[in-house]
Amino acid sequence: MDWGTLAGAVSGGALAMAGTVLADRLRHRYEADRGTGERRRAAYLEFITAAEACHARLRAIAKDPGAEADPGAAGRAALSEAGIYEARERLFLDATTGVASAGQAMFERLRALQRAVADGAGTDSVAFHDVHHPYIGTVWAYRVAVREELEGQLLAPADFGWGRWDGTDRCPTCREAAGAGAGA
Image: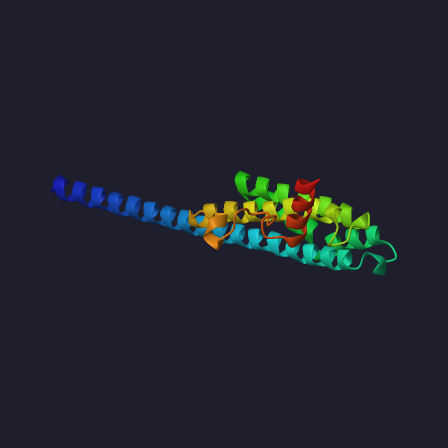
């Protein structure tokens, strides 16, 4: 019997098995990474969509503060009905640290906006703008963090012809208040 043939067959079989196992492991890793990426993207979108639904409802309440019998209850309901709490928990579970941190900052500013609306701040009031613009700034910071993670591309206010993310440079109410403050 020729031992060389047997050794060649055994080593060839071992190499084939190792190659198959390695290819299978790499395929599973790729599928897991792709699944994680898709899950994160869905969580990021769910969170910002819930935040925008809540923001729209809070602006509607603030547009006519006297229309709600209890603006505090209406503001709390806006948070709950938008599903922001559930979306935030999912964000904490699936997001990277940078995106989760940006999302938490956005949530805290949204809560500050909700408290101002609960206190009766109207959309034209300084009290509203004092919390609204920082919220808008954190929305953009969240978007930048998500975009950087998912696409590796940054955004800047200048990309849109803006001076700032928070919109105070484009807000007539804030520009008027700044002009009145400068004249005093």
